[in-house]
Image (spheres, protein in one colour):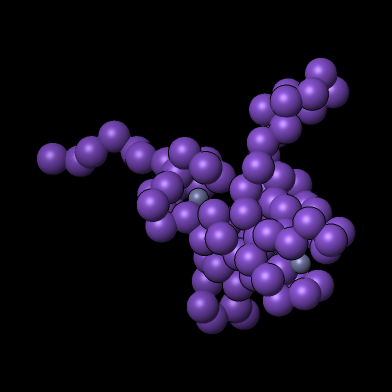
Length: 83
Ligand SMILES: [Zn+2]
Ligand SMILES: [Zn+2]
C-alpha cells in the first residue's frame, strides 16, 4: 500500500511535493520582496539552482542548497517547535 518515496523536484527534500515547496517563493531578507528560483547554466556550476530577488537592483543571492541547509539548521521550515 505504500507509495514509492516521493521527493520534491525542486529542492529534493522528501517532506513535501514540488507544488508545496517553500523554496519556490521565499521572502527576500534584504528588501522584503519575493525570491524566485533560477538555474545556472555555466560550466563551473551546471544546473545548480539558486534564489534571486524579484528586483533586479537588489543583490540578494543564495544557492538553493545553502538555503536548504540554513532552513534545516534553524528549523524554520522542517520543525515548528525547535528544541
Ligand atoms: Zn521542495
Ligand atoms: Zn530583495
